[in-house]
Image (cartoon, rainbow, N blue to C red):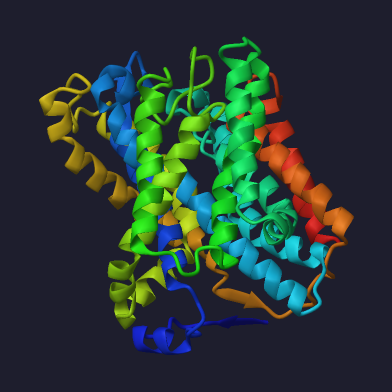
Length: 435
C-alpha cells in the first residue's frame, strides 16, 4: 500500500524545524552543489564538429579565466558540510545506542539511491544508442559520469567519519594540522622529489582535511571565536593561495585533469587546503546575514525543498547540458562563437537559461527517488553489521571511481555497458539492502 505525502506550507515547515537545527549548514550544502553546477555550465565549451559533440574547457581557451576557479571550485565547502553533518548524526546515533553498521548503512542508503538511478538510466541510454547504431560517444556519454569522482571520495570519508570524530575529541585542532602537514609532505614528494604516484594519497588527505574542519565546527572547536580570528583564518587561506600559486609554482586553476604536469585537483594539492581555509573563513563571516534570511519561513522552506533534491540536480545537470547541446548546436539554433570571445560570453546567460529549462523536467522525474515522496509500507531490512556496511562502502566507492574514470561507454564490454563500475556499485547496494 502506498501513501502520498503532500508538501507542507512554508510556515508549517518552519514551525516543524527544531530550534537546535543548524539551518546554515543545510543552506551551505545546497549552495555548494549549485555553485559546482553553475561552474560546469559556465566553463563548458561544447561544439558540434563532424557529427559529434566536442567538449572543452574555457580555462584552456582563455587561461585568464582561471581565477574564477577560486570561487567555483567549492567542493571544500561540501566536504566541510559533510563533516558537520556526519559528526551530528554519529553523535546522535551513539547517544541512541545505534551501532556503526546501522549508522553507515543509513548514510550510504540515502546517498546511493539517486546515484544508482542515474547509473541505470544512463546505462540504458548507452544500450539504446548502441542498438540504434548511434555511437554513444557522439553525445558525450563516456564523460557524463566524471563528476561521480567526488561522491566516490565522499563515501570513503563518511565511512571513516566516526574515527575522525573520535580523533577530534582527543587531539582537537592537531588533527587538522596533521592532515595539512601530510598534504604538504606528499606535494614535496611528488614534485620536487619526483615521486608522482604518491600524489594520490592527497585524494584522501585533502578531502579529509576539509571534512575535519566541519567536524571541529560541529564539535564546538569554534566556540567563542571572535570576528577578528575568523578574518585571520580567511586571510591565512587566501594568503596561502597567493603564495602557493605565485612563488610556490602551484597552478592558478583550482581544477584540472589527469596528465597535467601539475594539478591542484587530480590529485589534489596543498592549494586546496588553503582554498578550504579561505572558504571556511568566508562562510563563517557571512553567516549572520544568511541566518537572518533563513529565519523567513519561505526562505527556509525553499532550502528544505532544495536539500531534498540537491543530489538529483547535481547528478543530472550535465545530462541537461548534453540534451541542450545535442539540439541547439547541430540545428544552428545557438551559434558557436570562438570560446572566450566577447560573443561567447554574451551568449552565456541564454546558454545557462536553456540548461535550467532542460534540467527542470529531469529533476521532476528523478527527484522522487531522492525525496522518497512515496513511502512503501513494508518490512524494513535489518541494519547491516559493521563489517557488511564497511565492505558496502568500499564497493560503492570503487564502483563510482571506475564509472568516473571510464564513463558509461566501455567499448570492450557487451553493448558498451559500464559493467565493472556498475557491478561494484550494485554489489555495495545489495549488501546494504540484504543485511
